[in-house]
Image (cartoon, rainbow, N blue to C red; front, side, top):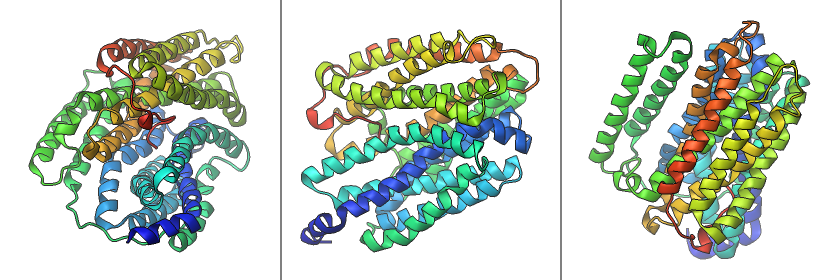
Length: 473
């Protein structure tokens, strides 16, 4: 496509493209947090145990993150619009499967298909935006795109409460179907087709790294019931390590690797993936524990839970905006350290929970404070990475950061589920000790991350062009 027609498309229909693609992305982000509030109801209706509930959350983020770079490669090879429509169609159909699920197995399978669809849709949509918009319009378009992350997280928890308390938890998924069908009808009319580049696609690498992470999560979840020395824990963890080694071998041997070893070894990328992994793990881990505590222990309804989550979700967005301003003035390192210190303080305050005390005076203040700290960590992860990477590696580095955003959530939920296992079974009589242990772990991890960030995050201020207000979604 020549430059002039593309610019004409930007002037006449570019913003219609942006609206449609942001709506599609909004669905994907909402589905990360919308399920959190519905978990207890889903568990009761489908008779799911702690392990199964953990997989309802982690399967989506696992497939989304594990296959996202592959989705980006397919968008390059097959064309962004074709990949976008394939992902949107799969995500819509998978949402219907999830809503109709009558068993845990069917629900988890539907969540996996949702994740695969999201992994195709998200990078393809971003590719369309970057080729549709030019000059200052591109900056504005990407700013709107980045804001979808925080807004989707905030509205997801409220929407989850409203739908679960109203028509039922299945509508958490059914609501995607009419939106997806409308987008499938509208996208071909406004998004121009583009030829692929016929590049080789590293499918084996994508499958191996996703399977490795799945085994890692399975081993972590199993440890909560079987113990760390059990074969069901050790064997999956060993298998995960071996597959990660195999992934490195594959990346060194294929012509067009999923993740270039040279890029992964750069300090800014190591720093960014570490900060993103920990921040997302803490966010979804705290969401997971809080939802089950509020509904299982305190007897909150899904709607009440969604409302109490809303200030925390908004705090993440506020923290991201604040972090974006501070990084330009102070640099990424002090912002990352302060972000994790604030998160540690907030998680520490949350350990004061008690069945005899109000959640509004025990859980909520620390929850909001921890969330306020997580927001700047997201910004630091992307900003410090992209500002210190050679221009030719921007795409790969961005894909890696986004991948670790999703995988961090999967691992975080798996770990806190294991630590809090005794308290996550309704009617077990185990009390809240498990919840306190899980929250304490989050505080400790955030504190350790602050120390690591002090030495790992690159010093100095990034160039103004690289300072953003949200993570790479």
